[in-house]
Image (cartoon, rainbow, N blue to C red; front, side, top):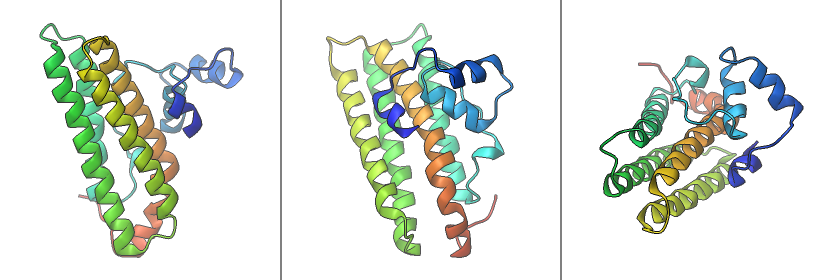
Length: 184
């Protein structure tokens, strides 16, 4: 699924996609992430559910804030007060928050000596690079900023859901076993 997100290329005539789309709103969190990754769940706000929890209160709160910013981006596109300058500020805010959040995870990897940290950090690096590309697009006066903002929101929310369900869930037990846990 991660490969599909990197290129953000929707697939056509995919039997699995047809099966998931037929479920409508009755999809699980994992299926929603899959649909989003395929580009077929665009422009919909993501609602946090406990399925996304990694059983680490600090990280769960950060994931909620990350999704909130993605949802704000989607709202902003339809807002009458949309400006390119405000769009750049909001896209930059997402990038800044993502860096803060990913940095928090990476600090916990070091603190707990998480054995799967290197590939996880590499995926974080790729996300940071993609975010920088989006910020540069938002700055470019020759690119449709509204389209860029929608793409940022859809990409970031799909990436985050995919990342939580596939990568972050792997560290949940490790962190809990090393004293990092708790629900608020």
